[in-house]
Structures are given as structure tokens and as C-alpha cells.
Length: 190
Image (tube, rainbow, N blue to C red):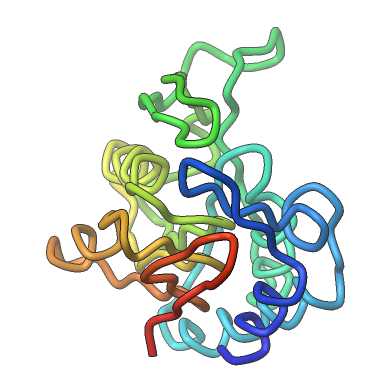
């Protein structure tokens, strides 16, 4: 998606440790017009999949997932990273490693929100090593729901998570795939 690649080059910042900072438009301050265009593109790529739920992980995937769900006219669910008093004990849980924080955490979803009747599209802002998507896939499988695929705004192709998921038969649609990056240059996959 040329539109997104141009914005990444124009507004993104590359930091040591293969960190791409795009929080000025995607995941801290959200430019709703940009994210809306991304959601429309994701809808086009999955519109015939029978999606009944959109699933993400808190917190930075929420804006994109919400707008994707709006395109599909279905609810979206987000996995929580902390158990709150209003969560029942009937939960689906998985462990996820955060590339940006360098820590493992449990994620959880109330079992009532993902059911065997659902066809789930996983949506996230980034895909690096695939830990978050794999944890969400585990939850979808535990719920007995159908997985239609995963959609991400930006994939760090050089970290291999997306390639591994695709090799495992998961439909992964990334709107921009970065094969290499430095503070001076970002190289995108065609």
C-alpha cells in the first residue's frame, strides 16, 4: 500500500534495536483519517471471508481494529493484559512476548465474547516476531472459533513472524512490509 509506505517514510522514526516509531499517526496519537484508509483496505482484502468478530490485543491495536470492525459492521474484542474485577473466571488465556517492552504477559478474553460460531479476523498495528498474533490464534483455537486470517498495518518482514505464520497456513495480509531499516533508510518489500 503505497499510501502507508509514504507516511512511514515521512513520519516514522527508526531507533536502535529495530524499533520503528510511528506513534504520531498509528498507535499513540491516532490520525483517524489515515487509520480509516487502512481499515478500508483490510476490509477489501477480507470482505468475502464471513467475518463475525474482529480481535486484537490491547492497547495499540485497538484503533485499527475498531475501524476495521466498523467496516465489517461486526463487534471487535480486545484481549486484556490485566485481570480486572469485572472479568469472570470463564476466560481464554495465552502468553505473549512484547517486542517493545521485552516482557512476557498473560492476555485474556472473557469466553462469552469468542464462540465456536464466530469467524475471527485478527487485526494489529505491528507484526514482528509473531508472538501477539500467535497468542491470539491460540485463543481463537481454544474457543473453537474459525480463524479467517490476520491483518496488520506494518510488518517487520526481517523478523520472520509473518513468514512463519504464512508457512503455517495462516492468511496474513500486511499493508506494508519492511525488509530492512535504519535511521537513514527503510526498505519495503514489493
